[in-house]
Length: 395
Ligand SMILES: Nc1ncnc2c1ncn2[C@@H]1O[C@H](COP(=O)(O)OP(=O)(O)O)[C@@H](O)[C@H]1O
Ligand SMILES: [Mg+2]
Image (cartoon, rainbow, N blue to C red; front, side, top):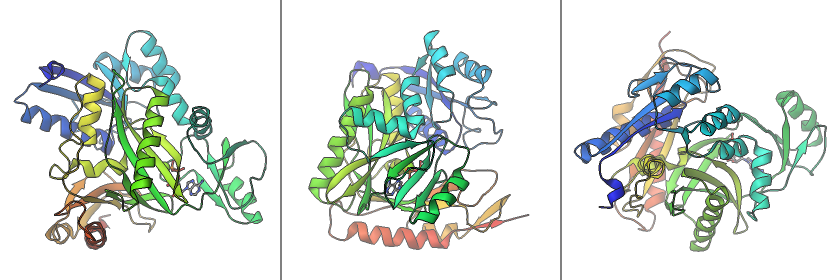
């Protein structure tokens, strides 16, 4: 054991109290148990929602908006390190805290750069990282069709994007995203989407998990398989590009790097300065000795990284609210049937379901790494398990 790992005591304050903070807090508890109390990390949160997913496990819950300067101040006063599980915090207000001596990881500058899709891509391009071409749009301009119109800020789960296929879509896209600052991006006819979850520590060491393969549906993540069913060349490029991204930010913590693969070439779609939905499979202890959540805590508290060598393949399937317009209280059906297929359920305890809201995920772990057809089989099983779970309104 490294001396950086002896008797670590730290309070991490997350901006955001959603499922990412919840799973981090669950991992912190497990680490405390496994270490006999030597690794004592507690999680605080800032979230306006009283019964947000991480509420029950948080040591302190500051109930205030993500950008509320008093709320941020309060979070800082009970925490040793500030970090994020969503990108909606006010980077300027967080920078003021940092300037007064609060430790913020990743830095508010990184947060600010990532918050704006245009600024983010310009930054990555300036560091020689391949990204789709994009232009800031104040009026209707064309980068050729099809192209992707995106809100520069605040978009998530595809909600800020509008695909322009034909000329008529230009009006429609502006109407839909109207009033927001926009960026127009070239449409990439990608054949695969992959991502790499990687962490960087204060010494500049980078530790990456194996490349994941992502399947999105209408801009929202449906499923991630690790390892990705791709060529060794693409996997190597994705790892290299992710390393370049972490180097470019030169920051501390876990980052999620989403990429497109076009003709074997890897392009960065977007970067998240936090643990990431495509890394949830790392929670399964028989598949990975260290989860992305543990790795983030290790990075920001100055502990050495945990092992990321994969032991078994894992497929994660999101459980989203049905797209039937219902919003409100709910219950699950079919969980036992999904579990009977070997699915491990991770439910986030959200008070209400909404269409397409991330309510939980399930994971399936395979029997042998790199066995032919193993990931195909897991994907098929994950789809089957997911189809058994129903979210039913109770109003
Ligand atoms: N330029 C693009 N070309 C092709 N597909 C894209 C492009 N931009 C986004 N997409 C598709 O939409 C998904 C969501 O887009 P993204 O910009 O990552 O939005 P969000 O911030 O909502 O996750 C991507 O994972 C991809 O499937
Ligand atoms: Mg995305």
